[in-house]
Length: 90
Image (cartoon, rainbow, N blue to C red; front, side, top):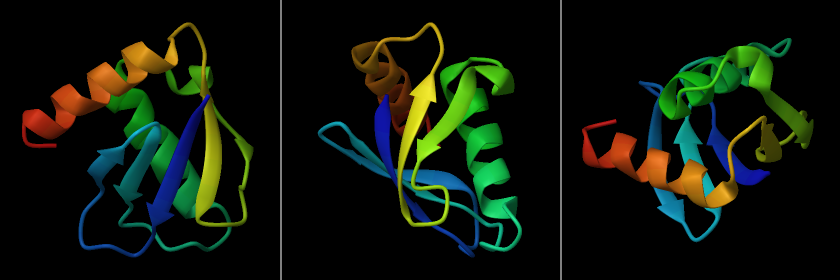
């Protein structure tokens, strides 16, 4: 499980930064009818290399602060993969 803070309606979808075990993500989609959540799940799945079905928002679906679960990946491994995405230009 990972803490995620989302900033919707950004110019691009990208990881802004990792702070401890919290990831700040900018999402281009607006927070309307679940489109920002869907974009977040799609982006995070691609960023960490898991199928979309393995990423689930388990808390905070209606707010900016969310808890996201990833199937088959430890928190340490998640953070390592996200740091590589940031280091590689997002």
